[in-house]
Amino acid sequence: MIDPKTLLERAAQLTDQAKSEEEAGIRERLLRMAEHYRDLAAHEAWANENPPSVGAITSALSSRAH
Image (tube, rainbow, N blue to C red; front, side, top):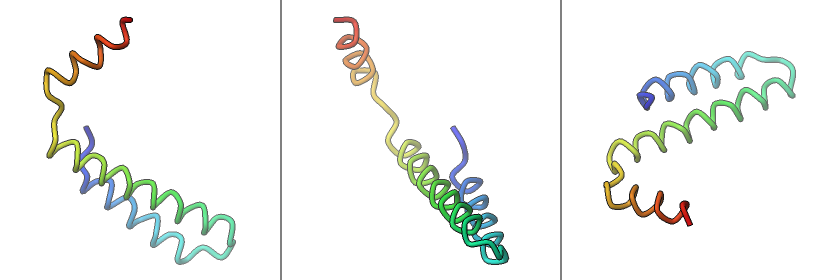
């Protein structure tokens, strides 16, 4: 697992970098990357707050075996 704060810091860095980028294509790519990092941070935060149960894992693995 990755610390959500680390992901949000990276997103902020990419956003700052995009602000100083003159080429529109690169700027848009940096902003998309920053958004992806924010999405990952949200997912990691949710996963930290909602760990999977043993029953859910067993159920998921059982359904794949068939």
